[in-house]
Amino acid sequence: MRTRWCAMLSLCSWVLLGLAVAVVGAAVLVPRLTGSTPMTVLTGSMAPTYPPGALVVVRPVPAEDIGIGTPITYQLRSGEPTVVTHRVVGVGYDGEGERVFTTQGDANDAPDREQVRAVQVRGEVWYSVPWIGRLNLLFTRDQHELITRVVAGGCFVYAAGLMVRSWRRRLEPAPASAHRAAS
Image (cartoon, rainbow, N blue to C red; front, side, top):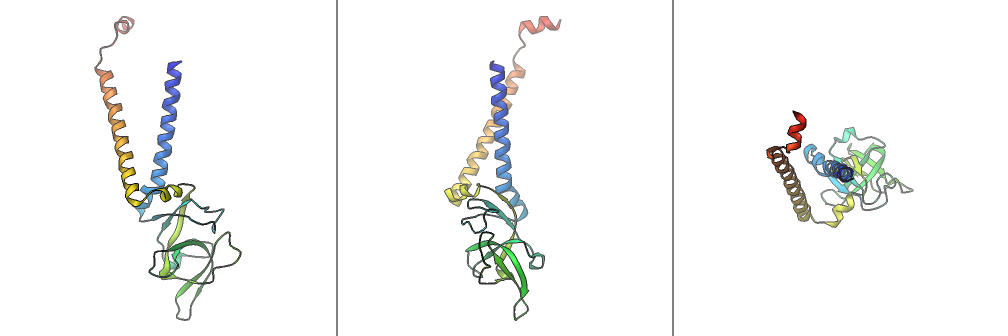
């Protein structure tokens, strides 16, 4: 009975560890390695595709690669930090020949009033992870870093403990009954 319980506990631990690694990889590691930016969806304008609380990962793309149907994240006003993620529903050029985009939230009935200039575009939505963005809202940037370091340290301590336990088992003398059975 104890062996079954340990096996189930071990399986659950591995599944949880795998899920944690996948979430951290999708939310932190992949964006950092690719120069992308993880952002949290705050409103329902893109529901159900990107509901509030979803984490969207936005990667930079040239304006020429953005077409109708592409979800983009852009600054409401050039140079200001406030951004919006909406889908491109029209592509055109303004009076000066600059490429502009007409956008609309998936849940909105009409396109946005203001056209988006290429300079305002931060990138296209590469992928999203549901619910994970809610964690971004709970903690500040410094708290994120602290939590990441604590979790990473905990993983290293856990791994070190497993290694020490494995070495101890190897160094322990085999029980006498095991020697007799092998003879």
